[in-house]
Length: 139
Image (cartoon, rainbow, N blue to C red; front, top):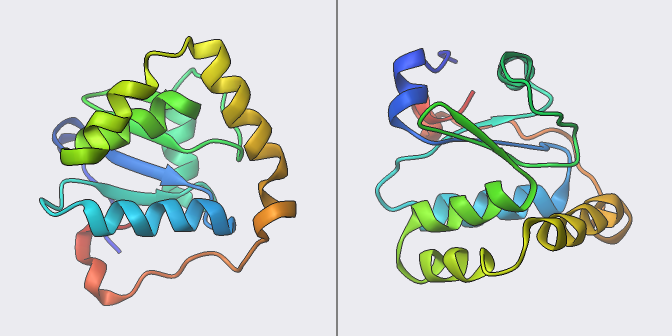
């Protein structure tokens, strides 16, 4: 697969998620269905691409967060999820803006609690292997 260029990182939001988590994969599948404009690019935390992206930034991250890179900025935890909703537009956009009503420490506490329990509650799977229909949108 091709590596997303630096220019692509500036123009397209990139969503990096845990490819072995069923909850994370469900979020990814939902986002791809709602992304009618096909603006998002994707990667998993386990891929070389995901590890490279994480290595480029100074925000403390781990496998317990989705990461959104948009316009050269890294977003993690609840901010990444809510900004993803906003970028999708429509009803998800409204939900995303509504989520920002809550203070970050509350949003992130809830996010981290769910992240700790996600394997127990939802299970794991082998890492996602994207098909040819993803073209240059997945790394």
